[in-house]
Image (cartoon, rainbow, N blue to C red; front, side, top):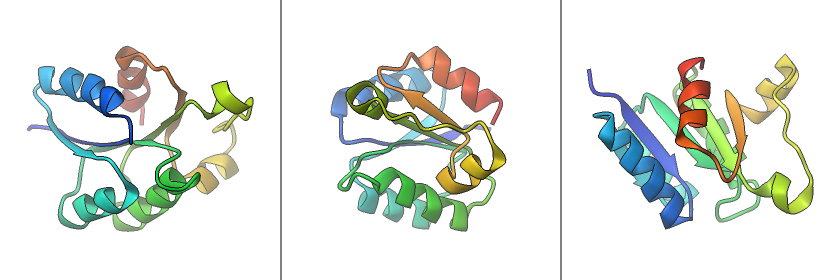
Length: 125
């Protein structure tokens, strides 16, 4: 069975890096550059995994997208990525069940990420 990955990020270089990695693994890769575009994809396709940037059109765009994705597909594995920690010192924790309920993600990775790191966290989601 071919896995479908939805990548959501404004950065075309990031999308291309992750896209090439998953295409090389035989996955179907769908890409969106905005929250609205990702929502259109989710309305017609249930991916096996979603990777989204925290900051999309708005600073909380990734969080809003994750909430909407969870309403449609409660068991969808979601990884959130961002350079927020690097730029601001803010840290998003998933260390308690309350954190996971609020953030609606299975993993939070600081950019720049390595694809192997993403593979590892998504394998356990």
